[in-house]
Length: 253
Image 1 (cartoon, rainbow, N blue to C red):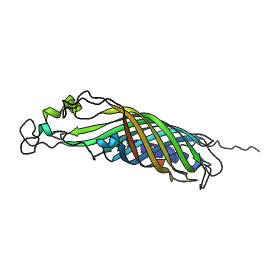
Image 2: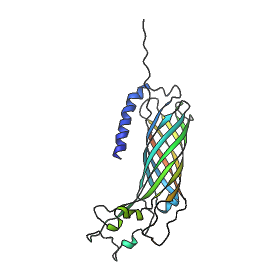
Image 3: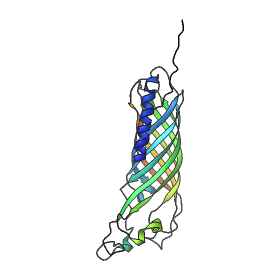
Image 4: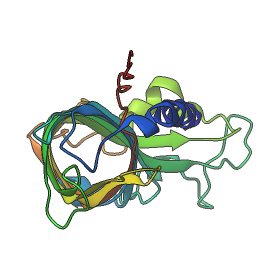
């Protein structure tokens, strides 16, 4: 999170340097296309069995052509606390309903949703209901790699049964390909920092379980058939186009 903020600050400095150089209102421009983005996503399909609501936060970098095509790559971190898996540590719970650490003290065990995806995308801006030819309806298609799992935290306690590599027997790691769709609105101001895009995001993941055994159900074979992992929600992004400096004109008498 701190690295993302530092990158965002660096991008702001670049934007300040180029803000006075752009001619957004005059014509369609070609420019680097950089954004810091955040998404709120609900889950469906097989993903919903283990995970509920996901937050997405990430960076996108690419190029917008003079024909309003956008070619980009993005990386996003997924996180949330709405875990749907139940009975994960039933075998570790004592008669009083507690999990104890290596010293016999009651341990605090937290299970969270985590994941990431890296996509390449192709988009198009259609100047509909826009103040300039660089703003309007924004649609894009993407494809890439998706991974998600359960993150197990024991805080300051040490529970040997769920430490280090033993966590892999519980984390439900799944990986695979994904495709995504975005429909929204992109706005590039004639002047100033009000540059953004926002809209509806859809993602379909085609993933496979990467573990050979689940420790909570050791006698049940781990399914390795392809899963359909669905996410849908809204995406908001602060867009920071980086403009080339306009050459100065020189006049001689």
